[in-house]
Image 1: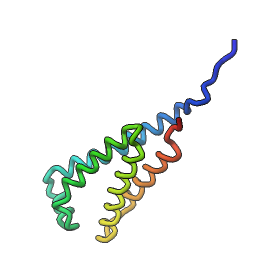
Image 2: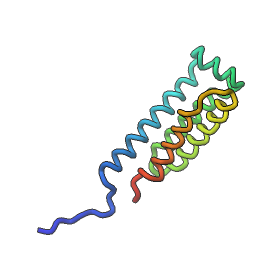
Image 3: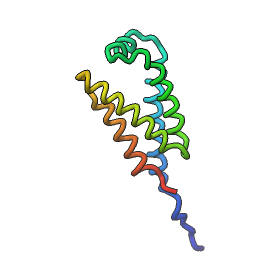
Image 4: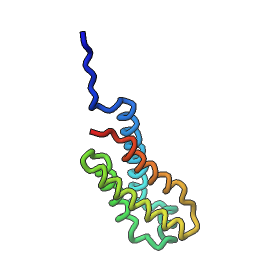
Length: 122
C-alpha cells in the first residue's frame, strides 16, 4: 500500500491562482478594448485630449490580440509583453497629462508577478 506522489504537478492552489489572475487581467483588457470600439462621449473626449483619437481602435485591437495571446499557454509570454507594452504607453500618456497612473502600474506588476512567481512550471 504505497502511495505514489506526483512531484512534477504544481499545487492546485497555484494553478487556481494563476488561472484566476489570467481571467481577471483578460476581463480588464477585453472590457477596455470593447469600449475603445464605441463612441462613448467620455472615451472620445479622453482620446481627443491625448491626441490619440485616430489610434483608439488600433489600441483596442492590440488589446484584444494581447488578451488572446495572454490566455494561450504557449503564447502567454508574448501576450504578457504585448499587454505590458500597451500599459507602458498608457502610463506614459497619463503621466504626461498629469493623470493618475497607479492602476496602470499595478496591472503591469500583476502581469509579471503572475508570470514569474505564480505560473505553474512544467
